[in-house]
Image 1 (cartoon, rainbow, N blue to C red):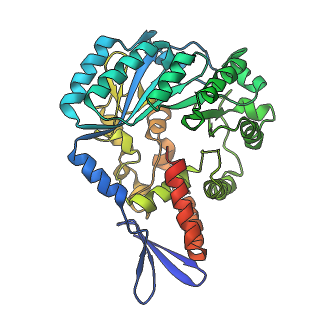
Image 2: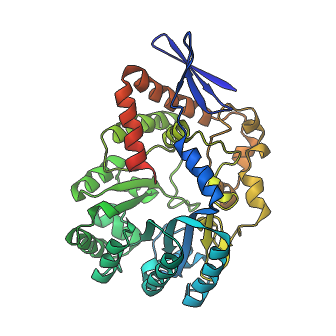
Length: 406
């Protein structure tokens, strides 16, 4: 299936089967033909690569955040930690199956509550693999100087949750936590680690009800001078859930425009439109996918729980194990009538965890998919930049690859 774009009296065609763009001339010109990521993917497959390894290193937390999808940090189960013995067993399985591991995440609960075993896991991994990308997601309240030194030594990317100014943050995450986090953030500055730190903010109905919009949060984070991203809360709690905005379509287009501006300006706000993210990734890699989420299929991602059980996604802990047949069923685009005849089916993404946890009736029953229109808009915007100034288009793609790919 093909999609045509007319820009300044020039015709561009996107081939939905090959994911190539062409400018229609006497001799058709392919745009963004290189596919280095795909070549690297083939090389990785030859090396038996696990792209993403996640440890639920601590199935407990020291906070009780109002919107926590992990139900207080333990996913509705017992408080526990991943032990050295369990790490050894997991390592034995990894070593037999994989030659290479790309990215390692430490998650929770609150992962720093099991810092000793984070170090143990890194030691074990380092003895078998050359891993250059360690990451940790933390609430930031338990970080001390030893941890910061360690994160610097192993070049961890550290993601700290902070939900805005003191009043709203403490309302969502607990009294006095805002001051503690700001104090701990300063440690990263002292150890010259600003580039390894990113703040993550969750926008909720509480923000909206208290008159706090995205612009207010952006102004707050700009003053901190640290990379950050803002995302909407994931919940089915009516007290927290953001209602579908009547101007939703207009907001989608506006978010795409603003995201292009962020990328070109190399903004500290690394949160960009998911639609634009998918389009840019597709134009660069041309990786085709018959599934909504690549991380849920095959051996792209392994998430090890505190009890050694393996999942494909951190959000599915305690719900759907890696080999659960429902994951394949819900994740496969061939199981949705609307997707079968869509020009964007080879690259479209949907959060399958949302479908599994909150239901997929809307996706199954809808008669029209607006998402394809958003993709079309984003593609046209990128092509307009390319048509106007190829150097600017190159800057867009280079900045995206360097600063905005998570």
